[in-house]
View (cartoon, rainbow over the protein chains, first blue to last red):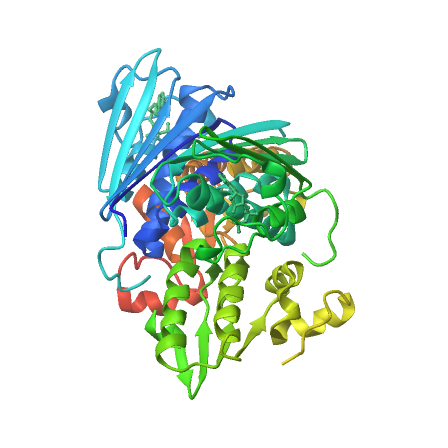
Length: 147
Length: 147
Length: 122
Length: 122
Ligand SMILES: Nc1ncnc2c1ncn2[C@@H]1O[C@H](COP(=O)(O)OP(=O)(O)O)[C@@H](O)[C@H]1O
Ligand SMILES: Nc1ncnc2c1ncn2[C@@H]1O[C@H](COP(=O)(O)OP(=O)(O)O)[C@@H](O)[C@H]1O
């Protein structure tokens, strides 16, 4: 089977598209034969990054969210990109429990979950220009006892 | 709930992406509350158009396929676009049982299925430039007795 | 792939995958033709037990095998066919040339519906 | 939404949707707070019976209700929690402040696994 495979998508930042985005990326990765647990991990991480675009980057205004997804060998790389308000201090934003929107009941656990559920998370952000969250995870390469 | 919603995606023309494309479009339409039968109809029509890009437009070479999907009210519009070899005579290509690849066991039923399963199918094609198949279907607006 | 093909005498049963699309039919076409040529198959039974999705690539696969067997006087049938798959077989006209046996779960519901009522029950 | 909220005395049970994400928690947050304010709720039970997916928006929703109830001395619990949801509650630290009761299907498997073994069985 082919060794690399790429997919891009762009969609409106409606909260109803959160589940669409999770399912689409998961479907794209099916051919890696991920375990159910790996798929749940991937979906949770994507859900966190997409929700952040909607709430934080775009303040609930309807703009575009982009996903670029690459499969190389057994690894998937997912880039989630917005052109929203960006972050001044990425390191601080990534601290567990840190949130700028406690008023919206945000837990500040979004980045912590991305890091817990993916192998690697990199964030690039420019205030006023936008943010790219790049996450990587190896899928389906271990025989997993519970999935 | 919002009244229009748009999604674009682009991916490599690997046959393993056929099921990804079906699932992604179906997931995008979930919020219209489609019946199971409507979802199957939609997935079949999309599968036909994507397969045509892979086999006919690109002769199994790996190039890009684009999907543009819009929801307006209860209707979904799906555009499936390739930049492949195009068709001289669209009307003839759309005749049931007509196929240029009987050697690959094509049935010539692709367009017939798209027309059977969607409310509307329009095809624009330019030889040497590519093809856009535009399909529309109302979803979830009737209470369906079996789904 | 191996375990999806079962040969008994001159009858080959092919247990089809969940999704019978272009991607999945490619390998099945080749393997089925190898059996027809090398193992003197006269009849093919397509088993749709696991199948929930099929598009026209599936129709092409079935008709191609029908043609290949037809030349040597063989026959083709489909078993464990659910409502969706039946719709596809029906619309394509394939139901006219192959024997179709419905999936049990579906047969009751189907009586009420009275549509596509041509297949045998099993 | 109505039928997902059940009030018995001062206990409010909220049957959560299949996917507890940002999209689905928005409406639940508002409705729950309306109950807390207007209907003298002292305890909230989150019922995860139908839930297979949750992200940190769910954690925010639970912690927010915990805070709102905490101010009036109430409590929060989670029932019918499956393995996945438990993992999320565990990682977030929420398991320390709310009572968690596992889903029956999971409790057997869990004994073998011996991980996240803090919740009560039901
Ligand atoms: N895409 C983004 N654009 C702008 N700011 C962001 C983005 N993602 C995260 N942030 C900032 O980082 C903070 C922490 O994010 P996160 O860990 O996901 O927690 P939460 O979403 O619960 O606030 C957010 O409160 C926000 O200020
Ligand atoms: N995207 C496309 N690009 C070029 N030619 C196409 C495309 N789609 C369909 N065709 C042509 O139209 C014919 C009929 O298509 P269709 O009804 O889907 O049947 P089949 O795929 O079984 O051949 C094809 O055989 C091919 O010649």
